[in-house]
Length: 218
Image (tube, rainbow, N blue to C red; front, side):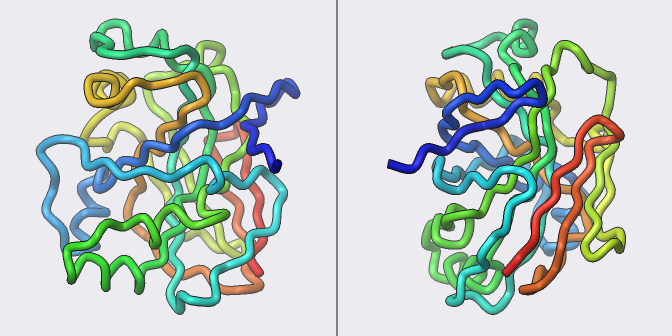
């Protein structure tokens, strides 16, 4: 059976759990999508088989004609938790890295029009490339810059100062709805600038100078 493992910068690995993804967590991205700005976190999930590790090749699905990149900071959960208070939320962060939420935009649009769930457009095999993770407590900062280059051209750039819901709020909110387990991850939202990925493209996502994610698309 294929095992999907998170990789840490020091060589540690950990079986990945559920990806909890936050939609419209940057106001300018919500605006570019013609969507309303949410009053509480908008949640969707990806399963463990969505994970792609650094320096991998991602095969884009043939049944979509419009695949979009969404660069996001990714957090991993350190230990099982439920109903976490805001003041304790950071204690449950194990790793931090950078990832790309791949979205089948044409499929997603059709699903939205008919009021159906997004899983086919969001949780397909290989839809969650994630870098090696750094230990959060070792590099904890007030805010983080991050960006995405496609074929060496800057596509997206963001700073966590612009998040509608910060790391602590997201962990506390999720833990009041779900029992979070060690190895679960949070895709914390994407800034504006999402656009199409095509076969043959290469992408480099950066979390400041801390860590880089490199993937190629076929």
